Amino acid sequence: MAAIDATLAAQNAVVAAESLGLGTVYIGALRNKPQEVAQILKLPPHVVAVFGLCVGYADPNVNVAIKPRLPQSVVLHRETYQLSEQDEGISLYNQVMKDFYESQQMNVPGDWAEHSSKRVASAESLSGRQQLRQILNNLGFELR
Ligand SMILES: Cc1cc2nc3c(=O)[nH]c(=O)nc-3n(C[C@H](O)[C@H](O)[C@H](O)COP(=O)(O)O)c2cc1C
Picture 1 (spheres, helix red, strand yellow):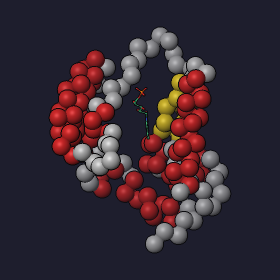
Picture 2: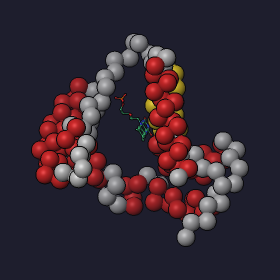
Picture 3: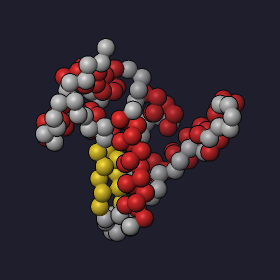
Picture 4: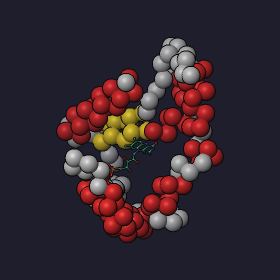
């Protein structure tokens, strides 16, 4: 529940910051090394950083673009989950993301769906997060 509350609060902070002309970047990568992060932040027992949030003014000289979002048919479902809408929307997004990666000169192998599923396909691909349960135990959370 606390993780959800922190996330909701952060999203409101992001909206407020952006309304003031600031830029923000969530840093989920903090969860790759929660124990080291807890040490750096001098967190007391039973406290863990859920994510980081960078706030600042974007460099106007850097050429940036808004990352395309999944089509609404993939992420918005009315009353019940509409599985039938998924394939077409994801194929479309694969193409959109291919163009986006090219425009950003990002070398991403495979299409977006393949690339994204590989990120969570095995323990080795979790960038250390497969140890999260043990690390939370170490930080004082007695998960069973
Ligand atoms: C939950 C979450 C975690 C994220 N973690 C990272 C991160 O670890 N490192 C990073 O550079 N960006 C991170 N981001 C930022 C994304 O890269 C960024 O939101 C995405 O590129 C879209 O950017 P845009 O909204 O400016 O187009 C994260 C975003 C979200 C929503």
